[in-house]
Length: 607
Image 1: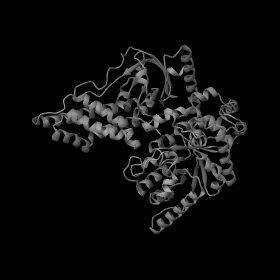
Image 2 (image 1 turned 45 degrees about the vertical axis):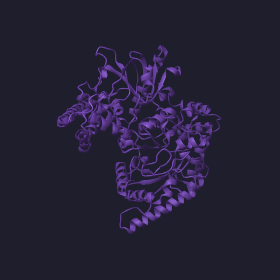
Image 3 (image 1 turned 90 degrees about the horizontal axis):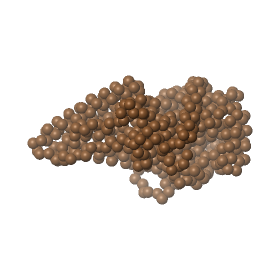
Image 4 (image 1 turned 135 degrees about the vertical axis):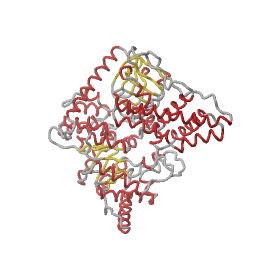
């Protein structure tokens, strides 16, 4: 297919579908009546309250409709919007604008809601950015009620062929109001995998792509389009050959899904009887359910940045204890690896007032920030020590490049344990400490790091970025960002060998572990613990059960002497083809989120 007909995005609900496009340009209505006479103020407040009550009833009906169509858990998506309408402080602020400025009900509500939307859109808080779509949905509904307009524009006639709907922003309300038999797929300019509308699309079985930046400019009503919600793109005016290829790909995806279901609940064990431990990477507490559902053997990477981003104050020790204990209880009997704050770079919280850096990813970040702020660091260390009493909580240190940083951290942990004991607070005397190997420096001295560590975890995303000197968020360099580069392979082997010699565990928690071809390579290099994105767990579990570990090791040895990334990939596919249908595997493979798609996802709050 030619690239000028491909609109890239982020696949948020799997499946391939073909149909005529329908562009929905629903817009927030223009508010024409701005001010009212003083004697009309009370009536405007009553109009506002009546609109809020009416929209609340509408949302409650949508919640029930969602419960019937998608399930009880998905119906809770509308709780956030209902709670916003019931928020007394928010409603009071709108009413105050009416009373003090004699604004009309619609003008006051628009002013306050747009003010909040601008604030939330620019926030570094993932949770607030996620609620922007909810806020937009409320604004649309309330204003349309006040100006007596329909909430959403009419969709295609019921007897029309199922359409692929293009819109700027998918709200949960619009998504659930679409009749499944009339909608073949969904595409939006804004949004991310964890958006409420994306969750609903997956539950309703509607293929969906978000982040299609130029979708509304390139797509016309009635244009034939092919939407791939698995790999995240839209193809304009596909040829017969492309449609046939897509149909084959979708058939293989369904075949693979059937095979994944066959191994659900079975151990991740190779054909020659070698066990592999599969854990989950957890960015947010909401991902714990999916991680458990896919039977992960613990959490291999619990990120803690969400605790601080968007806040004006740092989280307390008790807040962190509650989080760590909650996760430990959910995975009782399995390890929970807590990564200490990976602040800096693109993740500086509001609590930090620091001057901009010319190259933040090579600047003051991660362990450097923590060790330079021991009071901040001690709070997290104390929380981990206290939570260790409730389960197998371990600590993972990011961006270590010298053993002094590891030694200093151990001193702070020992000091924190002594202080807790003196204060009479129940806590562990120590806890396992691991190092995240994600720079060439750490990989070169990995034998020294391993001698001082309880375990190692490889962050392949940054390891690749720093080894190749390629910004993984740079769209122009996306084709060059390849974790299967021969230089990266040499470092991966070095890390695995150092862990084996030190008799400690080495896991991989980066994106490579979630990619089946790379997972085959990692197993061949000697890694026996992989920590994955939760959606990738079923596919990698199935892959493990298909292969022979000796064959994986032989393929890895051949890959290590390859001179190009292309040769590495060819070698791995040849080795894997003895056990699985490569085309079948590709059909279910998660897209590699790099370049422009990754950048858009980060801006939308996905990463």
